[in-house]
Image (cartoon, rainbow over the protein chains, first blue to last red):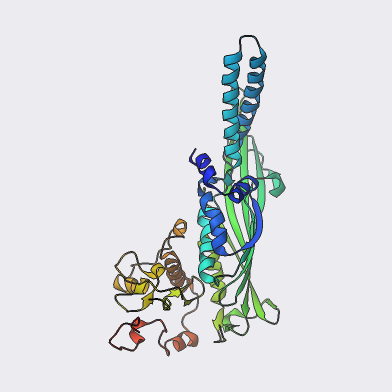
Length: 280
Length: 121
């Protein structure tokens, strides 16, 4: 309810993002934070509420149809109005669920990452982001499915794997270091199904999640050099030497990627370099 | 205070001078400091001096949702330094020794004692 009331205080761009859940743009970290900061109340756990949304949508359609039929019947004016109002209420519920951002990636992930970049970048420098908050568990993200056979008292079990490349970006830090990154969330769902004594189908879902960070970091050669322990850079474009930084983090249930993991990965790259005292 | 720039350091991964307009001087180190670099735990005390006064028993990562609160980036930087040092597989080398040959440029102890505030013109 608070999220619905909060909707009126959002800008048209913020409302558009909540509806579409995708954005590609280049802005300063502070401007990105302005866009994403009020989105916290709209975040929800992954994979929750899908059945309820479908139930509400069906309910809304049914109630609206019944309301219209009753309105045109001889004695059904009052009941028709009541059914229409109930249908509209269900419709509002469906709309509210459509606005949810699945996966809790903003409050602990993207927003603190932008706050860290705001500290580490020159005031007017901009970050390019490609954000997709539609959630990992979509058909387009499905990368694998296999039958697991019987599991315990459940005669059927399937495992479905999703890969969601939800954030790409690039930025140049105040010391001239260039970062290009991709964040991919992997979800492995294990759905076990059985029928109870009355013949009703019962299912149990187990979710395992991990985030893979792919960061390419390029340090300016006039300001930094690789340490002896680091070996050789994977790429050298003349102006910068580049390192590939890769890490995978497993999540506990209900958790998602957090910005500390990103910062720690980049810091591991910095640990392989040493400043050479070039002009900043 | 007009014209003076904050002498505190900013950044999580990179360290550079803040250079925001000065709000006041730190009561301990007399360094010109902007409003964002005063610790909320002590009156008119910068984050560096507040940390020296009451060193934390262990460096805990600041809560990610507090990213807008003052001192969040300072806490992140400290946590990063501590966790990097703890996770380092190699011990100190010649580069680390070399860093002790020069005084830190943000060390208030190395400021010349002129007997008056840095803000006095």
